Image (cartoon, rainbow, N blue to C red; front, side):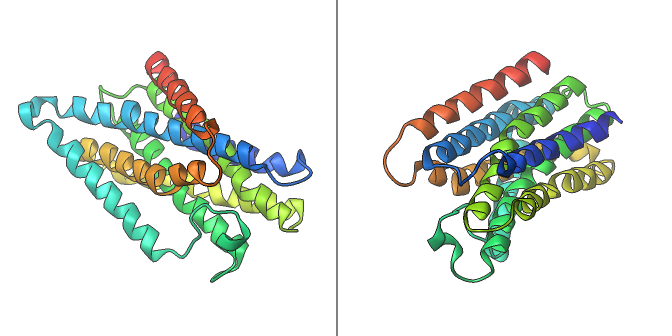
Length: 257
């Protein structure tokens, strides 16, 4: 039950964010969307460092001066994995504008695919940390895993809204846009459970798995979130929100972990 709770918390964050369509009459304005995106980026960077890379380095400490090796290898593979997915899966790069949604697949499909792709590494991260706690890894506590799940749930709130609100502005019904937002987050618990089941085989490779998830998450931040929060007219809202998200996730991880 504890593991199931960890897995479902991030999905709940996405679903609550998608429910914003029932509270707002129109689309999210640019400033609010930048704030959401910057905050999500800050949480992901902080989670990648404090919840994933640091435990990976701690678990490799017995390698001495080569302790960085598992983290470096896993981080690189995670980045390459997301790069490959990014190239193979047709999607729009978190761009909810009309131009970004015109060509190729139907705009709803492309936007849902974009956020779904974004959510894959987050589900993997929760799954890896949950598996580390489940199999008795001393560097990972249940409260630390819970902090990561809560942090990702917090940053999933704007992601759910980023899917549902632009689609509502394009004329889709509220119920349908809410469904698309929830659907985009469904990959997280599925991905987390798959990683947990597979991790029992790869327990000795836990530092690689932790850093793999970190590399995948940082790829999303650099490829999707930072460009999104910085585009258009200059504004400091995204940058300030980034720092706020980073600090909140750091506090959660250090105080609970």
